[in-house]
Length: 595
Image 1 (spheres, helix red, strand yellow):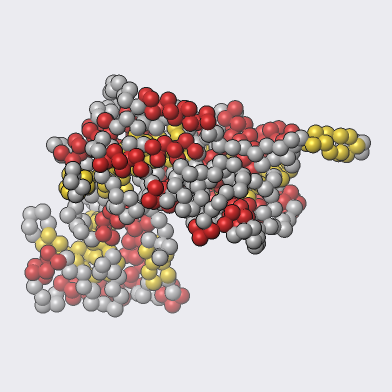
Image 2 (image 1 turned 180 degrees about the vertical axis):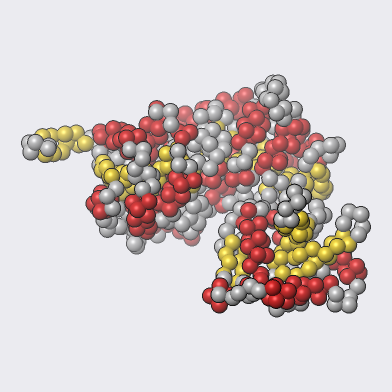
């Protein structure tokens, strides 16, 4: 399966303006994602002359002048190219007044988009490409790029059959919109899953959740879109999520998934996912509402009662308007719902019963030699990754600096522990590689976040395995004097892989232990300030030094930790609420080993 939204090899230098416009458009619209452009060396050296441009554009004109009756083909939106590079062609469209016109079609005939060339109205003569599309389009590629703001309802009848219908998201008499709002208002045990599609709508999400008193859980890429200091915050759900949202999602009568696909990391075993919401749908008192910018996600994994083909922002604005929450000055006085009071009480009980576990150790006596050369005994306590991150979080909160921070991680135990134990307070505060994640990204992400946010405290939380892959970028940090904070959680292992090999592969360990450099010496070699800590007694003071004493220079903090897995964990093939809470032996299905 492709790892990019679009890839293309340029075949003529005259294509470059079209290709680059299209590449940025595809990358930014729909679900944002990467594109790949291959510009061969010979074309890099090709001189773009008026004759080359004229020859290229003439081949487009030939499409409209090839003797065929283009008006006969309007309804078919012909996208036939005559030049040797099929990336650029002409397409025929019908305007709202019934007249036909030609647009530039970019991409392949079946996976491409049409654009008009528009001239700026400011008299500068500047031109730009403007998309040409219709809300009645049936092409899935186009619908994944251009949301239609249409609600698709699937209704379960009393005889078990289903009927479908559509309605506009903007309300204005839409029966489907009214039914969806009524379903939300009548729910007694609702839960919102806020995905990355909500990152542009934190205020709208908060207004909606507060008005209806609905608890909010988030995916990895949406952490912070709903401030976790808020009493309705459930924190992250999923494979290594908090236990409370996992339980509540499984027990909810209405699930609103706003801006996230139903990824296996948040669903667990699909056959066991959302049993209560499915039952409530049959009984007409609840169900599943899925909001996604891509039409192709409709019923791809989970069949919703309402699929809203829209952005999270447009959906929340429309629903808030229907509820009377859209006053720009915030003057709307909507009394918070009391329907979920017992549900929220249950939330509090679960949080007390199932806190995220933090492995801790008994202190032991060690003999140390002081700077004066005198030996003495001290009490030292070993540390876990969970303990270090929990203390990091406490120090930042106590200083009142959490809103000033951005975080990045590599991939592994340290990533999930950071997701669990940091109090996320704003959108896009966590920069991380999700799902089948990429080890080694932490340092580069942290550099980028600091360059984009020079006044922020940018903290890279990395494991030794991930950091070893890209620590050569310390040269960039040193050369450019980029004042980032790098926290290395070093247990000399690939701990997540080691734990999986213990659970699923009968302890047949392979390539899970690391031979690491001395990270403080490595930092010294680049003349980067560094700090070392291997026991809990010194941790808080050294964290304060790491975070706050040198705001204008990079600092590397090397923490020696023990090998501990990340709990809770939903093993592959298990239901979302069937979690491993403690590091004990469990019977698992070896064939369900994680990828």
